[in-house]
Length: 401
Length: 166
Image (cartoon, rainbow over all chains, first blue to last red; front, side, top):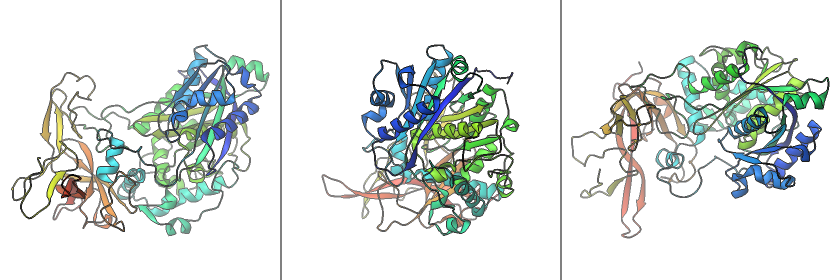
């Protein structure tokens, strides 16, 4: 890893509360996940020097100041906290905040927590008339829900690359098999291509089973300095975070993104070489000093089945228009060359917004340790996560061992 | 723009102010989206940016209102099979699916989303198909003071006759 541009931090603990629709307060899930991560690390809460919370926008004020909410619930110890929000990328921002504290020498041990309780149905904007809020206006003026945008990307794959709804269904079938053995997954049931095609159309060409649900859940991680990890673990080598990319788009962003009405214009300033989603992974690879060929396992944001295929290309696993071949050839299944979403992905979890990016990193931690019982990839050494949050938030984390 | 009353029809009001022109009934003018042009970079914005150019390095540039191209080619398309959540205002009960298109404007080099006119479904659309802008009903609202029904209008995309995919 001599080409790395950023120092590593150690992952000592990972913990989750199972995803579902449990109906509890989000703090319950966050605390359960935090306690599991601390236990996994063998570190006492009183030894934690910093808490980074990933916020939820759907649970009132405690959700907006989640760092303090979790610190108070675990018992105030006087340590500094932060609360981050970057939509689906909130968890990566919280991890990055923790990494900054550690790499700057301001603390040795940091706890990162994200949890959510979500309502049923389409994610919708906050209430109230807000004529200057694009997220409110897109529902009002276009009737554009989140699946609208997922469907635009999916349809483009079909008309440009000859993708079929069967290809999209194959992603769901794969992920549902992966999630069967995952005790944290909400949906642990095999889904067939027939099940997908029999499910109702939501936003053509995407059907209900192509689109991820929303869930309750919580995930947490304990990060430490490499020095602390060496002292704490002795000869045992920890999984390390080699990159956290939290990039934003570069103007002009020429791909239509939620919640926008239009792309930026490339009439005056040429579009950048990398599309935004490509730039997310690119920044992570640059930090870690590696490339797509080094990756053994990936957790990518399958908000829709077709979006998982976009990620294959944007992360450099294949060229444009080649993702369908990867899924058809079984390259990204658990026993393939490059398993993608061994956890079962959002297809088996449903999205718990602030917890999800952290959950991706928890899964890769277990994969790299060889502890992902029932869904273990074949001896992976490098893993990458990818996700993108509403309003231009990139999120990609690289783990190595 | 001003939503003038016309005889024998409901008053028409733009569903959002300052984003598109609404030619009066009987006018031979075509409706258009109103964008802004950043003079120093040549970049267009929609919805219009009226405070500061978002093109990096052009913060002092003049921003002028311009009418955007009224034709473009489909970048992608989909539909809303289920009724979107509020603040979307339902237009029928039960919900009737409507198509949504993202259309690429050649001159402005940008993609603009819009609902597709009601008589056109996803099966009628293709990436690359030529579309034109029209003004159509978004929903009907009742004026709380006068009880008058007001037609809220919005821009929509409509396939150009003989506009085949390139």
